[in-house]
Length: 127
Image (cartoon, rainbow, N blue to C red; front, side):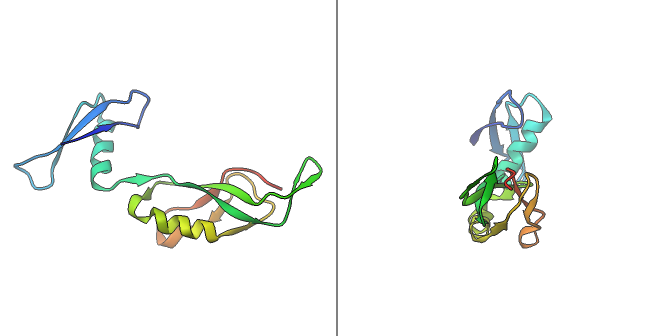
């Protein structure tokens, strides 16, 4: 049995996940107050995923309120959760990526990472 705290909504239900002895690979979830908790628990046990945040290098200098500042990195995040076992490879590729200025929050920095439906998106505007 595994105990989890649901993160789908602010309720934070305490979930208990147990593999059914009679069924092959079937999971039983208790403690959830809504169906989303059961879905979350099953996915977390079978195929955990995370939204990844990191930073990319910037090429050039940034202009903040008419004063040139040497900004070296731009914050980024994944557009959708990444399988946990692929996070290290994703981070290596993000850290190798260099972004040309200007960049706006929401711009795709790296599209369709390695055939996954995961884009790397800037989270800050830097001009």
